[in-house]
Image (cartoon, rainbow, N blue to C red; front, top):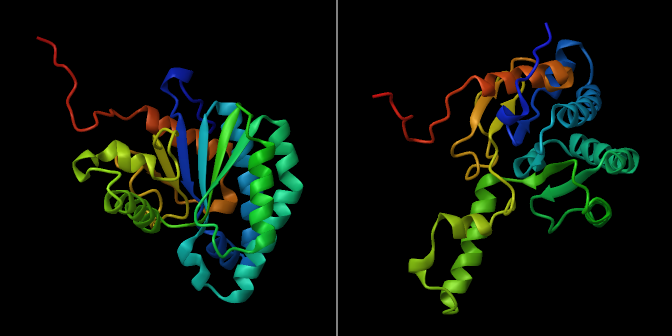
Length: 245
């Protein structure tokens, strides 16, 4: 069954996705984990196209966490090779579709060629307006908050900032997604129900949808279902709706 989303006014502006389940998808088919990662890239291509068609303004994907470096070296090398291949093969199409690319996460210490490819992709697509694709690479939510806290602490220590002036808006300006609305909807595939150190600050009022399907099987229909679930919810942000007298 295809779920049609409601009118554009009800759409989430910003959708974030934790792309989980590549390895389990492969295991269920008696395939190597690398096969799951390859199919995961295909799912990403489908999802970007679907998000554009639905009319989502911002799509953030959790591609490689700061904790993923603890995986076996062979798997890390394969994932980085997939990233390089994706940038070489897909950025031109993404650019042609009018999508802007932003990459968030720590860049210090990553392979120089990957850092260069990321910078070139961001520069190439900087003026695009159809949608913004935000890729969380070498990213961790706690690490992001530590980084922001250090930046603010340096300003306080130098006397440039009064501690009394620190508020939530200031902290937000020191995070990676400054200038981007917080996610309205977060989707996690693979059946797990946790944030896994992803956008901890930004997801304070985000609606969560947990999908049992593994990421390699994700498609436009599943995205539409998640958006429809979001549209059916009553978002009050801690308040209550005005009651009829």
